[in-house]
Image 1 (cartoon, rainbow, N blue to C red):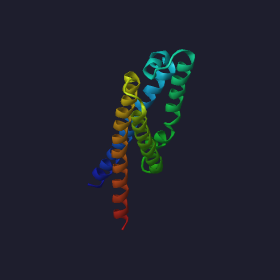
Image 2: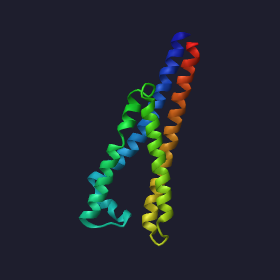
Image 3: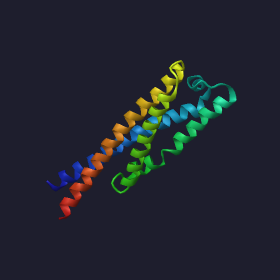
Image 4: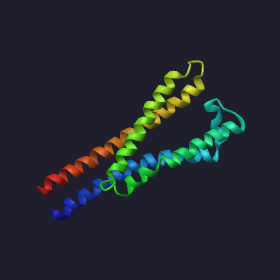
Length: 149
């Protein structure tokens, strides 16, 4: 019976890791696309030429940079709960910021608005996965504390 309980706990940790890995994969996939094929994306941001390619590549670099807390959360989501919390906050800030940004873009910029709307959906999905992971971590920590009493 004890072995089954340990296995269930281990499976829950792997589920938490999987949720975070999905978000990392989505973010790094976008980063690589921006870094390797920036010219494909400059039109979506109403940019052009070398300045547009540079801006898109810069976003790719930022995407890679932002993954640092996510990586620590994957390594050990229980021990690095704060990294998971940071990831949730970063994702929420992105979602809120993009939503505010969309509200400031005039309707006649349909292509740009569409690009920002994709970011909103992308970050909303990531936020849901990260919140679920954080919920599972908090539930696990709460159960551990109850078991110590």
